[in-house]
Length: 474
Image 1 (cartoon, rainbow, N blue to C red):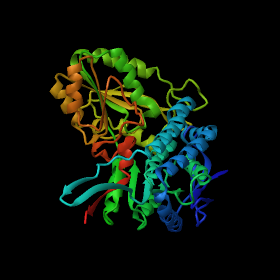
Image 2 (image 1 turned 90 degrees about the vertical axis):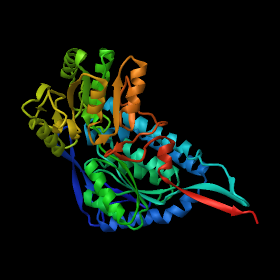
Image 3 (image 1 turned 60 degrees about the vertical axis):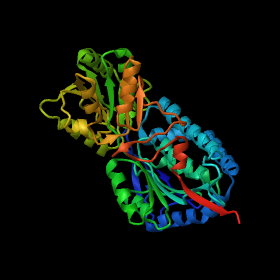
Image 4 (image 1 turned 45 degrees about the vertical axis):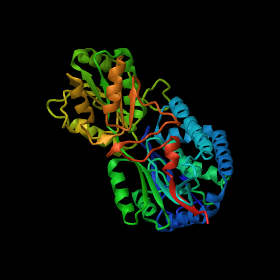
């Protein structure tokens, strides 16, 4: 059986204890590999390696860091088929979408940050006090401990390491305990390209992640995960006043106004809700539709959702793969089963098959704003529909949740689009589209969806610190 190792100080290694965890293929429900289960010795070794590597890595010129990161991108690209096969086995995703939207996109994002390494911005030198010249240095923070999620294992690993390394930091990456395969592969490939200790990968469970967060050698912590996990990390980091970067949960509304192109809205909402089986923090989870078009939109939505196919990677016609784990299937099933009496399941609402962790794309109507399915992140293929009678009511419903990562508004009215994009309290707002992300634009939320940005130059800057330097003229 395949074993997924750590990569520490440029070397592939099992856990010092020899302990492992079983990895289960979501499409079959069967164990397909064993992963190292790191304890204190492994994490200490990884953090020490990152700390040793930091002084020389930070002194690399941006040009040199760019060259090395481009070399890493080329090395990953040469292994695209291997990375794809591993990702599909570990996640059960449809092959085509996984290749283009995750593996190829991740490599492109790495190249973007390689270039951005040479484009740090800052204020110009000036004399703000007589006889003195001031300027700003933007510097790497140090050793960055990073905790990656299970929904996009390869892509999220790249989103973590690329800006941190480009800015001159060194990294200890802890992938999810259920999906560590491609992160370990990235670490192994990087060991042949980057200096030893610049990128370290430690596999393990929640306790392993806590060890990374708590390490006195770690200067900054970055996590993508649930809001609960983010709160725990922030609380732990507060003890030593570590910098924290949080990209947490979402509860994205799609607000459909009376003049919207309903055909385009349904296509965009279905794609935005059920891609990756709804396991995406930016996924459409709540449709808010004007009373005047609610019946027609809902009918079209149910027809489109009912036509979606659920299946394993071998099924080339499948639109959705499985949920991540038995625990995630149980969680989604339980949330739908707890539907209040006034809620109505219009499509789906059940497990599909007995092998693997498949769940039918689901549409629920009749819910109230304080119901759990409206307020809580499901992280599965479940979409709720609510109606509104006015713009003010639409905004109140849209903003009336604790999670504020992403939203979309669907309208032909330019003025309405401008009003809604100003008033929707979310870190990203799309107009007549949903879940389109590009490397050049920032991604990150408000409220309990966290703080800090991924992607763009804002993402790079999050992994830097600002230093004021002043020179006296005499």
